[in-house]
Amino acid sequence: MTRRRDFEGRWALVTGASAGIGVALARELAERGARLILSARRRERLEALQSELAAKGTETRIVVADLNDPAAPQQIFDQTAGAGLAVEILVNNAGLGHYGEFYLTEPEQEFSQVRVNCEAVVRLARLFVPPMVERRRGWVLIVASTASFQPVPYISTYAATKAFDRFFALGLAEEVARFGVNLTALCPGSTESEFFEVAGAQGFKGRGVQPAEEVARRGVDALLRGRRVLIPRLDRRFAAFLVRFVPVRLITRVVEKAARPQSNPPA
Image 1 (tube, rainbow, N blue to C red):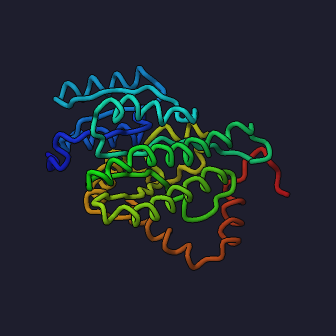
Image 2: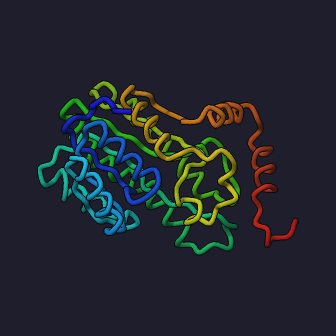
């Protein structure tokens, strides 16, 4: 199916564009007519996606950067907007997760999640949103998670960072709406990607994994409509609604028992 060319000729920056939802979002935006700036740590994957999109007529550039480095957002900005490209679409997709008992994990694994999932999101928004406000036009998509709706034992840091992303998106969306800037928090559940393997969290994958392409299509549709939050699956939407009425302690107790690492005997 041919997409409407909603973003014809506009530059879109996608972070975490080397795998999963990031790749799907890049392809979706390209089908909508956008020109792409792809950013991630792995150059070879970015170059492969660049070649794929270029073969279909999409102008594409790559910026290799590691958002675990606080200097990376400025590096990305300097090579894009700072070099004269009018970035009108910012997709904050890059993210890290880790499954395990907090008191046993390597400290750097926890700190990195905060830097990439929270600090980098704020830094990139602070760099790219002001020019959107000046132009009175822009679109920002922040990829959060259904994990942002409740605490989740054994991915405690990840869930907390995604709650930060969702609330940051909601607050900022209200601030910039009067300037013609749309901002959406995309909150997918289990999605086809390498995230669960990298995070060591296959147990959270569950059933009914959603294709990344479907998540991307619905996310971009929501961004265009100015929707503030989107959970792209109906059953996950219902679950996010239901947890409002269930005591948090009950949720965490049930999840803790279900998600406890098998090597850890019951207390």
